[in-house]
Amino acid sequence: MNAMNRTFAVLALSLASACGGSWSNKDLEFLGALPSRTELQSKLPGLSSTSRPLLGTRQDELAVGEASIAYADAKKASGDFNGLLDSLLTVVDTIRQLPPSQRTATSRRWGPYPDSKNPGAEFVLDMTQTDARTYAYVVRVRKAPADFVDILLGNFVATDQLTKGAGQLVLLPAAAKAVIAVSAPLDQLQRIDVGYFTADFPKRVDMVLTFVPGASSGLSGVGYVYRELASGAGAIAYQFRSTNADVSVADVVAVWSPGGAGKAAIEVKQGRYTGAAKAECWNDDFKITYFKEGWAGGTTGGEPGACATIEGL
Image (tube, rainbow, N blue to C red; front, side, top):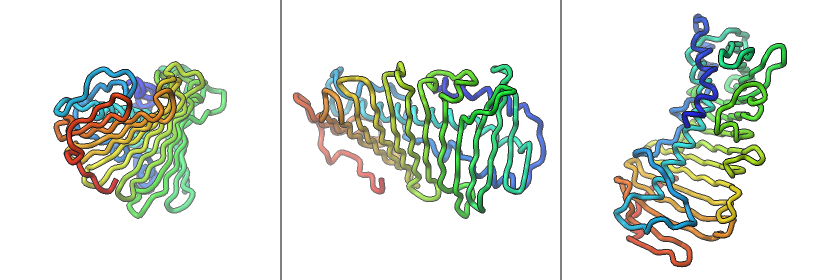
């Protein structure tokens, strides 16, 4: 996902070189309304993994005690999810280090700042407080003298803790591409919608990717649902839609304990393999303890009782 980060890294560098200044307590309240990647990112334990096709072409026989393919798929999905969050929050994280350039009783502005990698382009972040706990903000870009174009929209409703609450984000790569260079794979996307809740456990983050028509990735949409308990247990569910005639829509749900042991269920919803399903469990070493393949010729191994029990998700 490093390519995603680079999309807005230029803005981050521009902001970092801006002039300093003093902070007020009110400034910090505005900053508290901006989302934090550490609050929202998926925390599936373990090492980075390379997954294989979810269903369809059989590559290896599953076996109890072998490295879990379902875990590898879940780990990759978790990494993809976090990479997309990074692409949204790189600018936001940099803003936290800089005082506003303009202030009113109910608003703050950061910028505009020039973008040295896109000659003539400049960025601005505007935030408005609509009541004691509700904030709305927007990141805009333009090439003067043209008008600013919205590329990131957000809102947040705080609790008594100010930095905890419920929020929404919308990233608009297609709109940004009309003004500045947008790196792959963000250039495949029309928009990314994110909703989140951090006021209590389980924390929740939902993400929907909408691809531009005819995207070369072969995908038309991907949706993620992430949940996290105070214990460190978590879950990630995702659905992808593709042009693949074998698996055009598939659902995956993975759940894990604080130590990493977990289980996953996969089901094809549309396509030639509609109805095909697989369940797989793994231990704290990410090795298979149980599996069941739900298609003609599929096999089963291990005992269901070997699967981790995870409550509250």
